Image 1 (cartoon, rainbow, N blue to C red):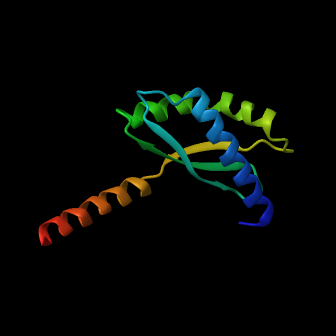
Image 2: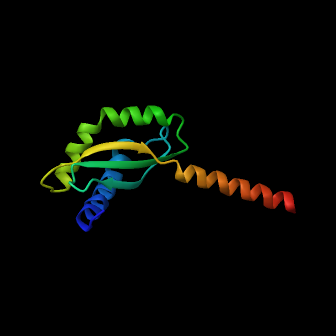
Length: 114
């Protein structure tokens, strides 16, 4: 990813994180975090990686995000001034969950050794 694409990805991650906290995060969704944004070289598409901790139903949250994708894109356009406003694609980032599971397994092994 080039310098411009990386900078646009950082801006999108920062602003989208704020928007999601304001509009989507509540007690039922758990902790919603934008872990990474990957922007295409032409800046027309952005893949947004999200992690969800403690939410009852991440699939319902992603369905809600998909419905609101246009509104989120429009809100981003008002906050970030770009020539082209990228299409947003949301994907679940399971990296933090895997890391948490590994940490728990290591802790169990340590307890077993003691």
